[in-house]
Amino acid sequence: MYEVIIVGSGPAGLFAALNLVKEGKDSILIIDKNPFPSGGMLNDCKLNLSTEIGMDLDELKISKDKAKEYIEFIDKTFLKFGAPDQIFGDDQTLYKEWDERAKRNDVEFIPAIQRHIGTDLSKNVIKNFRDFLEKKGVKFKLSTEIVDIKIKDKFYNLETSKGESFEGKYVILAPGRSGSKWLREISNRLNISYSNGKKIDVGIRVEMRNESYPITDVIYDPKFKIKSKYGNILRTFCTNPGGRVTLERYDDFTLVNGDALKSSKTENTNFALLDTIILTEPLTDPFVYGRLIAISTNILGNGRPIIQRVGDFLDEKRSKEETFFDKTRWFDRVKPTLNVGKLVTPGDIRMSYPYKIIKELKEALIKLNKIFGNTILKEENIIYAPEVKFYSLVYNTTEKLETNVKNIFVAGDGAGKSRGIVGAAISGIIASEGILKNENS
Ligand SMILES: Cc1cc2nc3c(=O)[nH]c(=O)nc-3n(C[C@H](O)[C@H](O)[C@H](O)COP(=O)(O)OP(=O)(O)OC[C@H]3O[C@@H](n4cnc5c(N)ncnc54)[C@H](O)[C@@H]3O)c2cc1C
Image 1: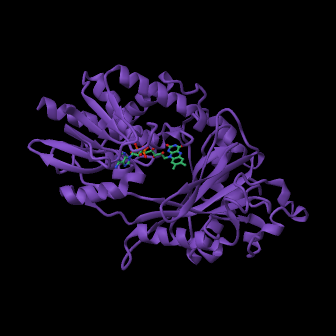
Image 2 (image 1 turned 180 degrees about the vertical axis):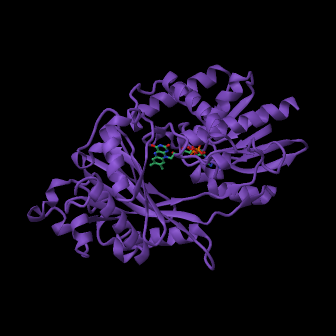
Image 3 (image 1 turned 45 degrees about the horizontal axis):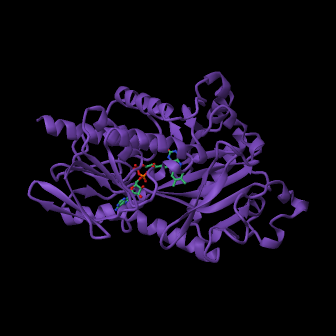
């Protein structure tokens, strides 16, 4: 029997445990289906230390000042466990020019202070985090998937796929985006209340040589917001200077994403350009819509994501394997970080993306190109698709993230409470505060 059981060892779960330990609790069990704790923290691990990115203060029901307090604590914690000292975006004079160019092109530039840990270094930071929690008495049960939760008197019985079960007085469900489907099923069984979202982000990943995107010397992951002629909002997201484009595999489709290592850099920079689509009647299920776009792009790519040269995209032509490195068009100048033919297939994203989204992506690329003096739309640059970001369901909770079922709390991306490492960590801390509050009432 544990006092608190946390499902998910991502930032939400780990920071919830840390705060409980800080307040003297030691009967805590963290369960994760993966063999290594961390959730999404292993992916690149850029910390966005800004209240405007990766969190929704209204959803978290906290003020900007309170959020800043949490952010400071989270950043200090990462530093304590070995995050690098270097910080980006804290000197406004260095990015003033891009800010002015953005305004001139009717683009909003959102400055953000960031710390980049990197996929390689984050492993060590997470190990230190785990060691610290274990020394304080927190137990980890890894490679263990929770399949069901049963109510037993005033306690909860969490059942694993291997037939084990763990009893807890309080439960924090922080299963991340990969566990959002499971969270929905559990919520239906336990009558935990939630509401459907209507939003989805559909976009592309753009890859170019590092020198084509010089802003990353001062801001690691610059955020530009562009309002299209149709009224949708597009934004740059998840920039990886010297990074790699990666694959994100799901049961029935594969998306593209990106990351960067701290110790070894590529010649390329990549970022996502995302178009936020809000569905209205009759189709209001964004998951169905996003999945269809992802699957159709994979089908055209013979089971893989599609890669296309910007030159071909602008000429309204498909890219082909035999001309993908054509020297006469300078295509040899940008070498894709994903293997062409093995992991991605040259093709035409206009075949699988709706007309409206293609038009908006093009409009946004043209604006970014103007801001950066014609480096974004160089013929040799590369576009990858599908890049789709699903929004989770939003769980109806108290201000301390307790659901309508007593002593069951939710936190992190899987519950729609965050969209990034720092936001997820904040929500984990808030849920742990809820447990402490219930204990003292
Ligand atoms: C490729 C990639 C790069 C990213 N880069 C960044 C970045 O640089 N900066 C940033 O801020 N954000 C980034 N993100 C997003 C970030 O990873 C998430 O926002 C964050 O990890 C969410 O934290 P979480 O605690 O809610 O969930 P997660 O970190 O997803 O953790 C949830 C954990 O729950 C476990 N779990 C799920 N279901 C069960 C179950 N039934 N039983 C047991 N365990 C379960 C999962 O295995 C997982 O370990 C990136 C995401 C990806 C995919």
